[in-house]
Amino acid sequence: MTKTKTASSSIPDIYITRIHNPGDPDCDVHCESFSRLAEVFGRNTPAHRHTRFYQVHLLFQGSIRLQLDEGIYAGRAPLVFLTPPAAPHAFFADEETEGVVISVRQEVVRGWQAATPGLWSEGQMHDAAFLLLADRSSAPSEEERRLMDLGGQLQLEFRGTGLGRSPMLTALALCFFITLGRLISSRSHSEAPSHKSGEDLHIFLAFCDLVEAHFQQHLTVAQYARRLKVTQARLNDVCRRVADIASKELVHERVLAEARRRLRFSLTPVSELCYQLGFTDPGYFSRFFKQRTGLSPSDFRRRHQPEA
Image 1 (cartoon, rainbow, N blue to C red):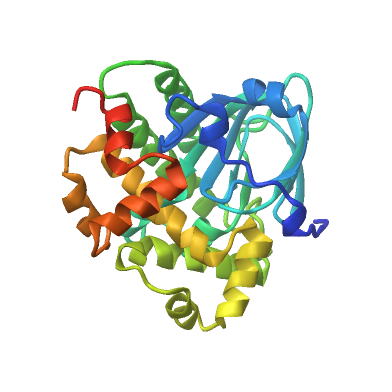
Image 2 (cartoon, one colour):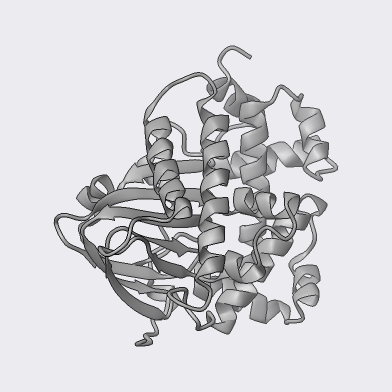
């Protein structure tokens, strides 16, 4: 396997839901056809990353040549590859290539992991994976058929407007990731990458795990760094190089994402929500939120909950 290295600081970070789902930029699960995304980025897509998302490409037809993290792969569909948050990837696909691209917020996937200990290993959560599915000489296995069926169902549900669309998407995505995890486990000594990501990426992903567990406690960057057994300067340097963001801002973004979600999907009074998110002063919370969104928490809620 050929190894390549690319400077993370030069790799653009694409916030997939804000670009491709402006009607609901805070959605947890995004599913789009490969061809639709290719219209925007092209089929010869240079290196990029999605710092805040797990992304899966499930291809039903065509072929692809892929740089995924530090590995280079090539294959004909059907195939699937998993890109963890911040892992760089680039690819060239032929004109016949089609499939679905599923992006799930990292905090959602981390929540599944926390709720179901032992379901996925740390390697499955942190490492990229590339799997060829059924080849021309054999029929798809039961798990492979299930994965492809779930990918199709996710695409249909994402395009629809039915009652309960959001929880249905989350439920389907969970089933999809469980099935993908089973396949990765069964192939752990074959197509799945044997190399490990760079040290910076592992530190970054471990930091993301800690932020997910403790963002409501408002730990300082120094406290996070001590838990990771690195210096504060090293942690900030890692975040800058991997995700082009300061470590403190990454924590703030996670708090902000939770505030936006609760303002949109709950009726909890703003003053109470402030304390739930670990703030001790409602006025400071309002200033924190408005500085980053341009709206006060109440105005944001009115805009996104017109009937509330």
